[in-house]
Image (cartoon, one colour):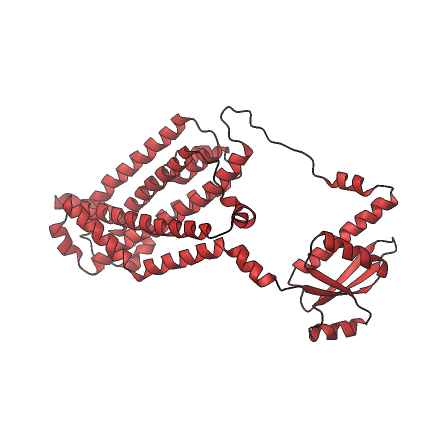
Length: 417
């Protein structure tokens, strides 16, 4: 057991001090900082920006347009423009105005506008102006039809529509919304963790083989202890990285004012209605999913002699992770679909698909237990198989580009006994 911990901590500290790990962690923390402060950053750039639009044409619609923009609390500043279009274009070049709007009346006595600017790639200003003119048109049409503003507002009000679940124990709409965001975030975490840290295990094994350190290691530490030491060492590394990232995210959120944190961009991070059981299942499926894929990737990583060859042998395993991820993405909108139910029992897909079902639906405990038994059983199977393949695979050198080499590794493992 002491030798297992030696390999574990050696793997952990070697990766902890590596430049890729430090750079990845710093970039992720910077990204979290930008996300949590994005509204403030955007406001700092937008506070002093006022779109100046010159309005050419109909005076009868100008006052209505000005009133409508005030009601919309728009940052567009419109001014009547008495000059020609040529003069307006010169004023744009000289920075006097940003754009101009030709405001006219159609034969049906309705407002119409032609917006002109240096470029129309920026959609915000023309969309606001179009929306304001649409409101003016609706008001004029309602007035001609004898409809009052109060009646028009009543017509425009959205219909009241509620969704009520009849199934006993089914989640409410608020619980589903929070669970959907939580599941969505966890799906990405599980997906990238399995790919990133699982690949790290495979590369770690191949790198030691390429440096010929393996001959020394297998004489002092059994291959099985080496494999699980590396798997657990990388797992500890991942937990450390996530702990640092989540701690930094928590600190960043604490420095934000309550209004910006409780509304707007960060409002979707409110998980107050989440059940503790869902968080427990998230941790459980995360750990089991990592162990399953890390064991398989360590096994196939032992078949290659150089780190450069790792990618081609782990590609089939990565495809399984990608398929599971896309099935889960589809299931976010239709969690009760047959394909979601069936694939939730497939061990390679269980960590993300069954977790999706638990988060979005009321799943009977026996179904969860069955999926966990299948997942744990498959993990144990690959752990035993992986230990045998690893024992023989670390003794194999030369080019390896096929998983067929598993048979050769098993033969070497039996001879090594």
